Length: 468
Image (tube, rainbow, N blue to C red; front, side, top):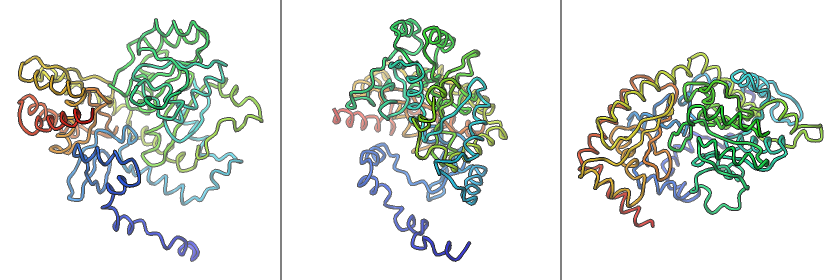
């Protein structure tokens, strides 16, 4: 390092700053960021202080180990701080590349695009943005321009992002409320081919955007639906957009979740989350050659759709490292086998616990749904919770998993009695044993009908009633 480099930035010491003010983390958020986040975390006892993380685990200041079954909502596909991704980022920073000049063609974006496309050989080109919602926004714009049509179809309960265009195809009312007017798009039920065809016959549909497995509730498209939808769409001159932001990159035991159904070849595919390696935000929209050539139809339109930080060297290096790790460590196959093990062991408990209604999913994307029990004592407690606010029982399960067993999970959506498990793909059999054992203990306590768990339930009921 040159003397000039040594002197540069000498006034900033990240370690010292964190040592001096790290304890203020919740106060800083309450004062300067979303003030409801620390309030919520304090309320449910999630206001932990994690000191470090590696793989599928966190550690607090006392050295206690926590199992991560959430993976940052799917961002941490490789787990935290994978050494290969870290090394790639160190290397790209040390290379001091002439990045983001906007008027050259750096090699890393082309190399990452080439590698991504190798997993979906029916697609030809990639646009790189910075997030999942940007990837969806890109697909919506490209579909509208390529077809010359205005309307997008989407599914009830879908989640495609929270920017205005993506929010217009978000099927969850709680996210949409208060942000109208949105784009004039149309909702259909997942699996309803008749509704899809009815809308297509109007002749103004550009595309149908769908999550092969919906994140909210972990609901998979019915067998044969995606292929039949694709045939309907193409017959009516519309496109199929697969939102693989959460389900892609091995999460479901296939590289993309749509690949579970032979013959499905979406016109546009959106990915993000795990492609980042957990470090540098990145989103990608993969599409067919003719779509890209329509959008970028002349040199005058060369920047008609772009992103200031899209294709930056750090994101591209992280993406390339992630795909390399996935191949070297066979993470797609590992997600399938570990997911089958975890889902199978949990499903075996359905007959044992009357509050446990169903275990579903694919790979390491698993939904645990709770339902109305049959015995009178439990049924009265269940009814009390449901009358106050649907979804409170699932929250009652999530809290002791963290507080007593140091396992981080979360409900799969508002007003749902479903816990979603989306752990890092590096989860191993010991982690499965730990989760199943802890879950069984929580279920035993819940079916006991007394104790701290139901005391917490009564607290949640009071808060739900007060919030009305």
